[in-house]
Every structure is written in C-alpha cells, then in structure tokens.
Length: 104
Image (cartoon, rainbow, N blue to C red; front, side, top):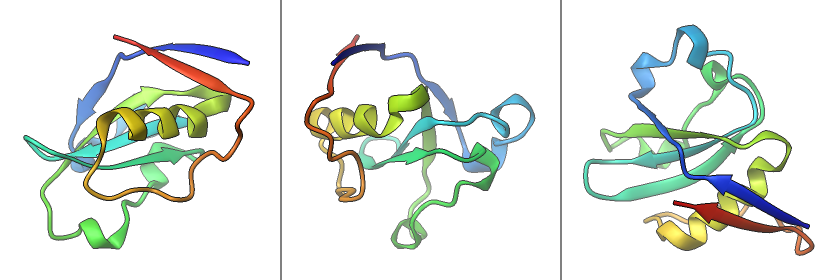
C-alpha cells in the first residue's frame, strides 16, 4: 500500500499545547531544538496527554506536529529515516507492506 503525505507541520512549544491542539489524535510528533532533530514519535491519544521520553528532559525543545491518521506510526518511521534524529525510536511501525512518501 502506498501513502502520500504532505509535509505540513505545526510548530509549537510543549507549554502551548492547549485549545485545538490539545484534542488532536493520531499525530506524528517531531521533537526538535533550534538546529537539531532529537526524536520522532507517534501519539494515538490526545496530544495534551503526550509525554516526551524522560531522557529529553535536559533539552529545551519544540514540537512539530503532522497529522498522520490511521498510519501515523508508518509515517513516523519514514520521517525518522529521512530526518535522522539524535535518538532513534525503536517502537514505531514494523509493517513492511506499507510504503510512505513524504511530499515536500
């Protein structure tokens, strides 16, 4: 199966997650500093309930949010391969029958 996803992101700080962003579900969360991608993750629950991994507590970071829908884990895996974050997420998509293309 082939999925095409436009690379449209919303950049917010974790303290700004309220209002319409708090209720977003099934999103890809790219955690980044000003000049480095730190981590790529997927949030199936409300974004207000998302907690970044504890090893990122020493960094000041912001979220880049991409709406992923049903296949947000596969989109997160493709983004991880393209962006090459500092920390790899081993828990995202292991389905090999889904191909994701990120349109920039």
